[in-house]
Amino acid sequence: MGPQATADFLAKLVAATPVDREQDHLRVQIDSNPKVPDRSDAIAGRGPSPGPVLAAMAAALERAGVDFLVMPCNTAHAFELEIRAGLGVPFVSIVAEAGAACRRNWPAARRYGLLATSGCIAARLYQDNFEDNVEEVLEDRHAARVPSVVTLSPADQQRFMALLYRIKLGDQSNAARAAMRGFGNALIDAGADVIIAGCTEVPLVLGATDLARPVLDTSANLAQRCVRYALRFEPLPAHAQPFMIEISKA
Amino acid sequence: MGPQATADFLAKLVAATPVDREQDHLRVQIDSNPKVPDRSDAIAGRGPSPGPVLAAMAAALERAGVDFLVMPCNTAHAFELEIRAGLGVPFVSIVAEAGAACRRNWPAARRYGLLATSGCIAARLYQDNFEDNVEEVLEDRHAARVPSVVTLSPADQQRFMALLYRIKLGDQSNAARAAMRGFGNALIDAGADVIIAGCTEVPLVLGATDLARPVLDTSANLAQRCVRYALRFEPLPAHAQPFMIEISKA
Image (cartoon, rainbow over all chains, first blue to last red; front, side):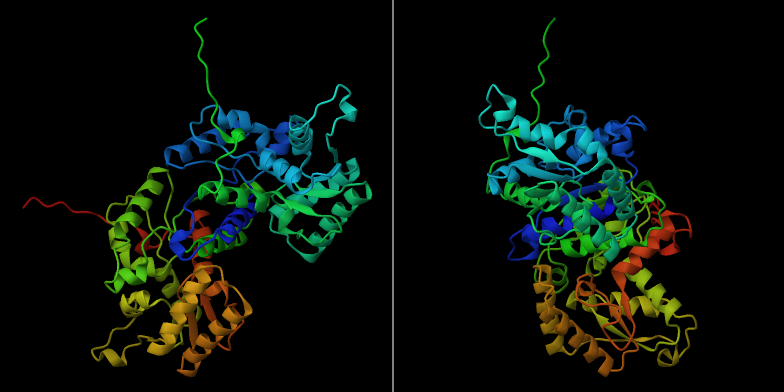
């Protein structure tokens, strides 16, 4: 949705592709549509749902012949079911891939610090992903190995959102970078073992080595996974498969 | 065609758009297709023409509902007539816009140094644009105010092409930047008043202030013009209008 994040994702996809010549790069069909209604406002009940327009965009890309779809906007994945309901092609989720990367890269991490929009946090995209992928579910939920998700204080979250909207207007200044590092450090102070850049605007001003804890760039991670799937290094994951719609005779 | 150049163009388009909020950004439909056959090889008669696939891509974007089309690849404009023949929507030429920017920004310039592919030079895209837009055509062609186009020596042009293909594989190293500056300086030594970055890979490693003469970034210029046209600050130029196809009864 954020067009800077879209351009950044395309650049990361290109950088992640192993090539001997230009023609080895992947063909990518993009609908960069900043007119999509604000996702956080919709989740908070303050604005129209972006669901219908996202579903229409996905359907148009399917008609254009793509092999699979991705959406480099974390918060918009709150509308994933609506988007996927009518789709016949796989849809690779940025949240599912980020969760899988966390489990793969940092299996011992107990607390993930989440830099994400208020909508993404309210929709529990990351919290649910961690809970749904626990290997051993114990009777006592608290004893299960579910990593906890640490978020900013309400006041910091409000300031973080203001920063995100400035980034969406083009601010990638040193001040914006310093402020983003500050939010990352606040999560580390709150005990985070790993920071999830859970909004694709975050890595525009936060580098992989800007913090004393690892940072998962959800946009770069999605790009790397896309390359592996597109080049058939790995099959598309189960989460991405189109729904089987059962029509039952009532 | 070069996917780095496409991502760069999208970023420049976003940066050139005046916005108060994310939704003010332009909607952009992109077909980033690195599978298009090499343009320079085709122009040299060494490979298949990219014309049919470019025309098919343009037609698909027209069907997707775009208001106008652009192609951030200079050399591919050698196939512009083939692309536009079947189009009902305007096509804004990167070459025509670069030529217009040269005349607007540097009306006194007499020699333009052209950093472009061998195909772009052989197809005379810039040379013809300057000749076709002379304000006063005198009987003596040499006395007319046609700026001349300076190109690299054959040996340098060969090295420049090798550099371009390295950039297409992701090389944006300091060595690549130094080599590109060297080619720019060779054109300045040959008398160029202005350097045209006439291949959208060039600005990936050559900044506006890297040379002692002005550099026209044809990709950034096209992006800036797109914004003006999309926001109706200016009408689309005559060169962009769809052809009127006359079908005569023989």
